[in-house]
Image 1 (tube, one colour):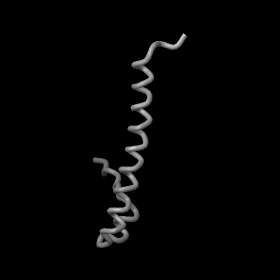
Image 2: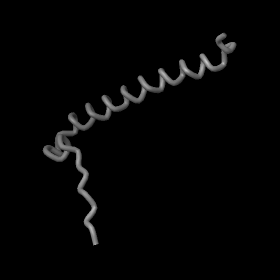
Image 3: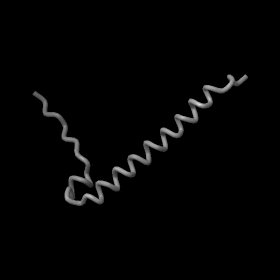
Length: 53
């Protein structure tokens, strides 16, 4: 039986008591998601317009 690989977040596991670091990382991830969401919204708006010729 194979063991599942351990997946851990390096910075959080090194210092699990540092809540500020964890919050900062959550904010960074949220900002990345927001950026990609904005890009996809633009694609959807382009699709709603007249087809390009």
